[in-house]
Length: 295
Image (cartoon, rainbow, N blue to C red; front, side, top):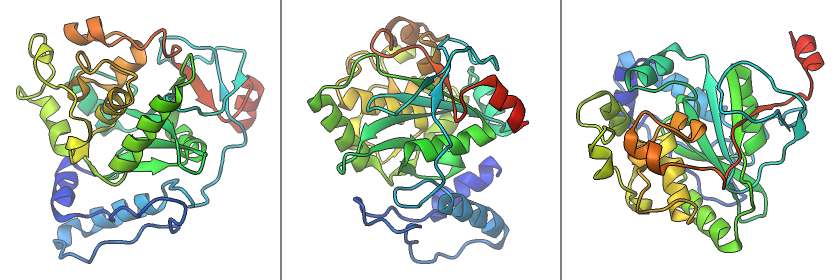
């Protein structure tokens, strides 16, 4: 989908409204009342609706992966799988990132001065005790969504690579409760595609000097977020990152992944270690033998 189509669909409301949590969520969320959509945007609207219907929303019954494993961690986004593996169960506070094969998003990130990974999300504890994952704009849709972690990660594995920065120590009860509160409050809010587009302009909050003064946390006061911004805002709200130094709207997924940044301010202040482990590749299979079998 072209950027023009995405912006236009934001304006006309081309994606369904959020459904009320908790567990009574329908298999696909109810749509808002039909709006008149220009004929040239009909195919784009149809594709977005199809993507929304295919998301691993709670209760949607999307397939779980055959397994869940982390390879050995490294601050590298290469294709190398570093054995041995260990079983992985998502825990609140874990940050999940992915890189798909989208040439468009890779190009846009390169123009903004960054690269893979291009998606980021955070795991939290849902009120029913299960884990959920919060992501802004999953699979190029136009809302922030709460999803089932492993089925959702499985869909990203099918498109590319997935990594996890696991929490090195569990969240406290208060931190976990705050993270849950933030996730449920932002579920269904808009994906911040307009402000994301500003990252390609001189008006962005990311710069060698300006990031020290702008791009500060807004908590729940925003009506839209893009993916890495949403993750950092969630961490600040839960008390996992320092609100005084965090810069959500100036942070990209690669900054979170690498623990260093080309931006001098973020390079000094955005350090997830040692509270989070280095990024580890996630797969639904446990050995390179299975890789060959899958091929």
